[in-house]
Image (tube, rainbow, N blue to C red; front, side, top):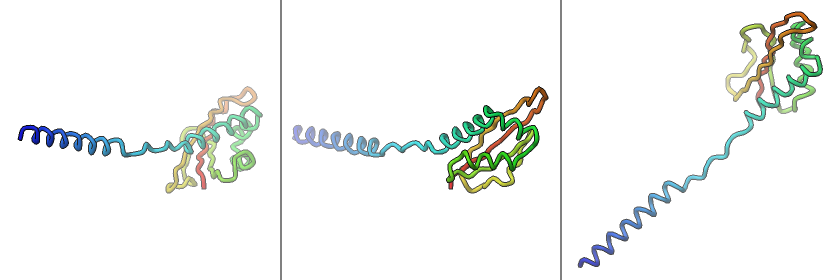
Length: 128
């Protein structure tokens, strides 16, 4: 009788270990979502490219948002949608959709041709 109870205890222990390990390790790890990070990096790189070419400083000094958006249309892929704002302190989010996953990048312009500009170029980007 003792051997039977011992064998039964061992079978219960093995089944508990098997069930608990299958419950713990049955989930497949989720694949990380790199799309927002890549979108933000691409938006910042485009602003940095415009600044290095000397165009972004002109747009910021003249508050020329339509010209900036036209330049960005040619540099960003067609599936990227965006909204830009040239502002000093706080930027308006009027045209930014609230029902999408939106990332933003800021680029600060301190001076242009020796005069203080103190502007922030903000871009909100999302995909279709």
